[in-house]
Image 1 (cartoon, rainbow, N blue to C red):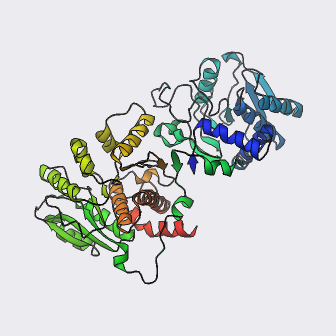
Image 2: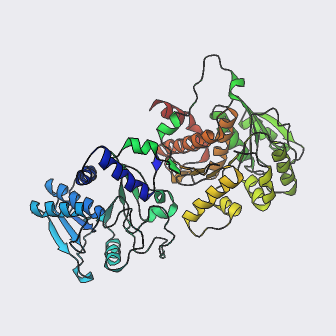
Image 3: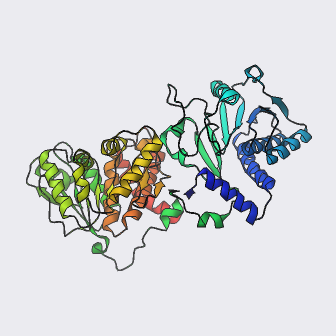
Length: 508
């Protein structure tokens, strides 16, 4: 699913109006109907509804929703700053007045603000994605009034005051939310999500976003170029390779995992198990001699290459035997390990997967970037990413730095977290749709390293391996959370649910 900027969304609306063809007022009615239908289904108890509507088309959506809810028995009140509207909003204002079922109030100052009861439902239709500057004046006071009420809030299109991409201009308050930006429980976004929904600061304002299709032009969507995409099941199902009757273990590749050190063999075991569970034909693991019995007992399916050191990674193996190499989980950051990492990268002729301590060593030795094969996959969590590229003043700047690192070094950069993002060497960025907070647990990243290494060794192109691997990792985590709860989820649960994740991706 493509993620468009506000100008592209505006152009998409215009193209649909011109080529469907459909009148803009009828397209607004279509949007209002799908929103009203969702609200009616969600709030069966029919709470009192207070709608705050602005002067533009977002306000027009709100006025149409007010009329549709009133028709089904909701008690609706509408609050306006003035009665000067865009042409389509004006039509819906007049339709609402003709209906004579809705209380309408014009707010001249804060003394006119309504009392919002805890049982009320507030619908925010003040400003849509076309907002170009932070909200000020009476509109800002309205937003603060709604937020202080701490009631259920639904924003239409986007929370008022929140920008569709870069929110670095907004003033932050103590709880890390933004001043004069609506805090919604739900955001009913129309047709497509906005880029800002995928950044951590959105959680204070967007709440849970629901993408409601309104029949915008598929022709325009298929033709327009977008730098960002949302990964869906449809996306990854097309990527999965089918297995043939006469395939054998050699068909599915031989991978090398360099992971683990004294006291950190768990990282190696988790990565190895995940690699095998993702369909690799053969797996060799490299770690210190102190981990030999642990690995042979815990993962009997894996072959073992023993390092000459008893405690850490100090020697690289013959690399020509392997279709892919994953390196980093639990290897430590000693000087000998750095030298061995240099040896691996210097001899690598295919993309590799770099995680954990491998990334920390790169962060301290930027010359290593020149040794990393093109299209290799880096999988930093936010802390490791900061060490790689420095601090960012905003999440949007962090996103820009991720793309810059990917394009400058011609690497695939997987920034782990909610909606894990995958920046490609061509500058495009994918955001994941699977995963949950229960996966914020020790070893989850090691599991991802194993998954990605397995897919690379099986012959998946690095871009597809990253997208498919991140999706399956998150989906397995979602399935694990359903069974164990997010609180009780551990990394091994993700591995245990990889088989079901494959089945669900293929079958559903």
